[in-house]
Amino acid sequence: MTKTPHKLSRRERQILDVLYEKQQASAKDVQAGIDDAPSYSSIRALLARMVEKGLVSHTQEGAKYLYSPITAKDDASQSAIGRLVRTFFDGSAIKAASALIGNAEEQLDEKELESLEKMIRQARERKQQEK
Image 1 (cartoon, rainbow, N blue to C red):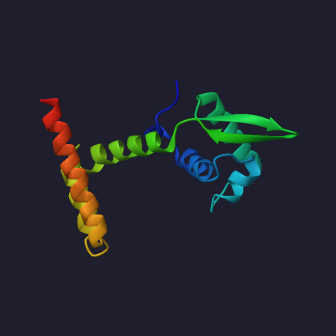
Image 2 (cartoon, rainbow, N blue to C red):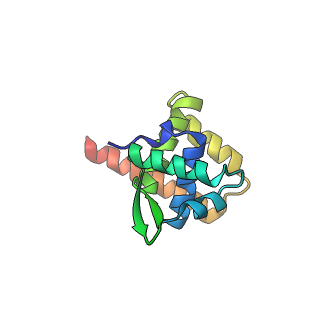
């Protein structure tokens, strides 16, 4: 059983970010990908703990281990967004969407607005099919 992404420590999140970006990386690559990275030995210890927790897997290539995330990035993103909505928006998707659109209002172009409208139409259609 894997640990859900919203229960990760800050360092575990940073490591997973690097692994999602690179798809596979050595401890040295992970360390290089983190701005305020701890020591190499700390990174190795964290990676070993993450393997034990079922967050990442590893393969051996010569003398070094290469690490990969186990949870798909989309699954991790959905879990993180769910946690964000529960924590900051009282579980309300509409409050979260309003905040995101309000912050991005000037940055959304016509194509992005059309895409949002399409997603809303599709959600309505799914709701109708469920009835």
